[in-house]
Image 1 (cartoon, one colour):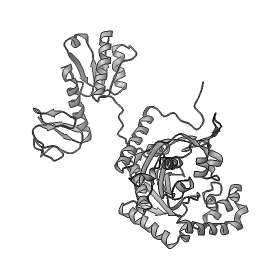
Image 2: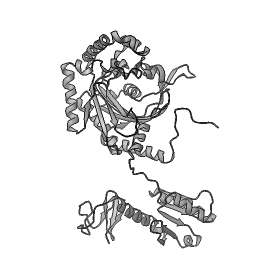
Image 3: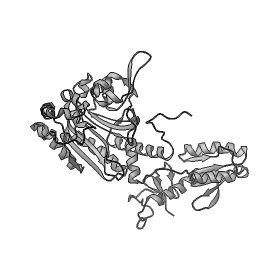
Length: 476
């Protein structure tokens, strides 16, 4: 039996619905913030990641899936999203667009060849957001607040934001020299990788997983101690904007980025959830003003954020978040003979195109078995198509909640379902009372004309429909 590759997962059933729900919240929130979706290729020229991420990073040296294609080109499966977005920004000359800055987000699979463990897979799905073309500290605060608000909308409560500043080039250079001076006397006490990093990129020593708990790393100089006045003022402005947005944060000088093009704001967002593990970071980001020029584009200030969706779904599961996921259907159509089956095919399509969630029988089971299938699918209504009823242009429909049965004209089936399903949804979704609402007044508090166009698109003249939140309320 052929099985999935190590470090990869099949997402299906209820878990797939949770993923789609998460993605829908991300899409809706990004739209409100005016970020446009961008989709870049799953594989790129290896040079993009070797230059963009850095030759000395673990991602490039140890974790990328590299291969040579049939044309002899060096290709890499993308291990992260930012480099591809920047390549697209340069190649498509987005820097020349009238609308600036360019605000985009992505959601796609990434590939890293690392030892699979909880929260770390070889194939992972990541969403991220980027602002390209703005150096305003407000952009930093917006990216952070946008990520936090997505987490809150998904039901996570204990969210902690950790921020730090690497400063500008002058500040980073001063900090780099301080690190080299500090680590030199201790270098033989560090791992082999850290020993090679000392002269090339000492900031990467601070990211070391092997020596993470050593006193040498814990007592290393902090970036904030080497910020010049301009960098310090900028960092304070970021904090001011976060305060305005009521985003709670803590300054954590241990957050760094070893890549040369990173500067100023860096941050991570944690979830305080029991059972989530010692590494409770959901996602992180920072300002990378040097990356576009490093990839042969114009000088462009940028900031971004990325988060693994699998890790996010795990956090929601541990938090026991209640989700508004549709796990039942509106109507299940049943039949016995071939004539009724043909009509079920036609009617199912008509109702689906009208916006209802409809299913029918595909295995030619008995009527008793079809009723069981309807229950398994959580059908709100069932309908047994009967040849005699169909000849009379009628259908027998049953409300599975109240167990009431009615025979109605096929001509009004769509309106019947629309009314019944919206009434049920209203009873479920709304907790406030109708007392004090006049007959011609909508529950939203507005007074509507007698001939009122409903949100469902119909004009109700006789039995006035008053619409709130996409649902219709009928006054008797």
